[in-house]
Length: 171
Image 1 (tube, one colour):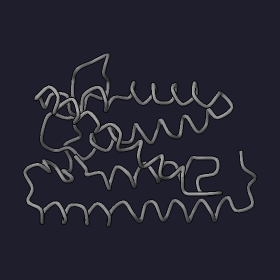
Image 2 (image 1 turned 120 degrees about the horizontal axis):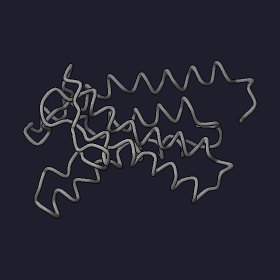
Image 3 (image 1 turned 120 degrees about the vertical axis):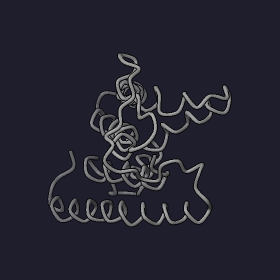
Image 4 (image 1 turned 30 degrees about the vertical axis):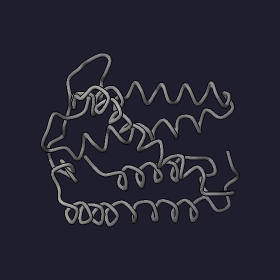
């Protein structure tokens, strides 16, 4: 389970790569992408409310909920901004996919909810797994690793975007 830094940087990177104008007037789209990429972990409120860890990495991490986020954005902002809706939906979906890719231990992620309650984990590498079992210093180390891994991705994405599309007209 990556910490919020990794999720936020990945969500912002997706927005930087795919949004029509990710940094044209402000960094607001990048911030929205970072927040949406962390939103799936609001399921911790259910964990605390019902005193059951089974809520975590369940429906809130599913691809269907990411599609619902797209639909809600389209209903709120109109069909003329469908590209933004898809980009923000992908930023939201990145949370479950990053948890899937970086889970070696534990029960995995319910990516296919509501069609399946099966939880999936790639099992190759564990990134910041079991933060509740880490000491304060280990959490700081995990955060530094996430910053070192995901910040260059965001910087590279923004740099390439500016280089490759500097003369392109906005979509």
